[in-house]
Length: 259
Image (cartoon, rainbow, N blue to C red; front, side):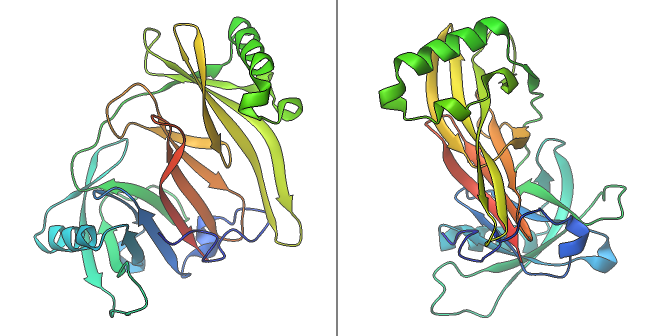
């Protein structure tokens, strides 16, 4: 799958506002057959997003879905939208075969272009509880890190345990702990982000899941379990947005970029 780095969208120090990148090329890439990103913009300003999937059959599925007049659903609110999908001219060097997609529906009251994450089927509207880490959780997590430091290979001195965020569906399930860590900055390349490290607390047992490239801005429920899927926005000269699953270790599910 083509990466954000491949398209040079992670090349500047600060994340530009959505309004400043309107009119630039935008690309949605997804490993899930029913998930993609698109712009939420007024009908007279609708701009297609180049949508890629890891399998060409999923591009066909989205195209036929939109041509049939079936709705797509915005994640979190489960709001219905209509969609339009057109094949771009086929390029034999492009194994993904982009589809140009626009959506129409409720538009946020804002003077900037905003993006949304959409599904071909109704989405879950799970509400995630977020709070600061508790002192006992911080102490327990520190003990785990200190004990397993040779194996975990974490930037221990740069972990900000006191600033960690706890995320859960309820007090009875597992709790995800997201810990700010080291700052990565490439002045010459105009890139800046703070890595975050993800742990899961299950009945007092902490397991390290992996690293995400920046602070989560939103949490989603893709599969109905009690571990959140995380939307991340890195600072760059366009859009460097990615969605991460942590259920089987940290892995990237989708991304949205533009330059």
